[in-house]
Length: 389
Image 1 (cartoon, helix red, strand yellow):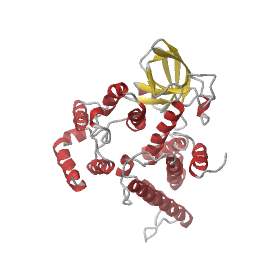
Image 2 (cartoon, helix red, strand yellow; image 1 turned 30 degrees about the vertical axis):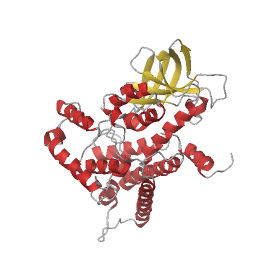
Image 3 (cartoon, one colour; image 1 turned 120 degrees about the horizontal axis):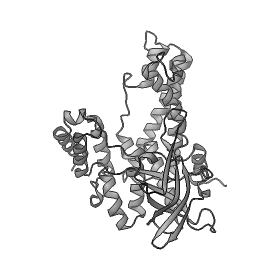
Image 4 (tube, one colour; image 1 turned 90 degrees about the vertical axis):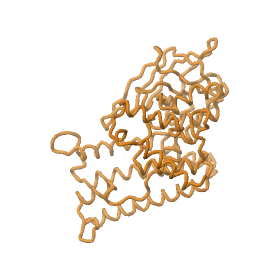
């Protein structure tokens, strides 16, 4: 089947199933649940996964075509806690999980029935992740887990957590690490949200006090390689290298571009439609050119990687560059607003102005999530450029 034929089939299906009632329905409503069930029946919540685990078995280019058609129709896939299930632990289990684990864990993800989170960083093991100290001790047919994780995104809504734990304290720190899957709904797991400077609490502290797990992923004491592989999936998703990223609109009209709209409203434009402040105009132009160059490079890499597989350590390049671009974008937005870009609360600021300020503050975490930019640069230097330690 040609991509054009496939796109038309998707459009026809959406015309019949993505009705005005579905569009207008609230999250969690009966209409939304029925709509999600129909998507799941088609395998379109995880289109690239094999059919036996709930996917549609689509190739990478078909996956992109599907997501682009969804985007054009205004379809938004069910919430997935930042891609923790569909883009991170799911692909990792496809690669490293046992058949029993795949049969048990992947179909609920494919039907958007569960939420997952990540147990990696610890108070004493952030950028030096291999220095983690959370312990897992085998007791019969299960592991008993004790320790603490931090910056656990979405732990307060998660049903399961994939956790890096130390299973051999006498081994070198990059060895003796394993990955286990832990049910969050047990007495031994405690979650405490962390309030950030942006006023929200997407990150949490997670405590394990004799929590248990019988789900070891891969080989015992070989979890470091699995954990790194999962991070490559995460960085691929954050940077937009995957099929979902390819589906996002690349060409935006001035009306659709937030930065351009803010410049018109707060900085002012000349009769030729140019930003009135020449110095700020040059900054915006350079930023837009950098954004466009980044997207063109992403598009080229996708075409060279038609299979859609994760591109190893190259993901660190796109993750670091993309994080800097995202931070620069929100920085320019609040600068364009001048004093109006400092709003936190009160009647003196519009909801849009307050939202821009909080988005700018929240964007500071972009270069930390998925591994700090410093970590990414170290990976690039060592693994991509081959520089000595």
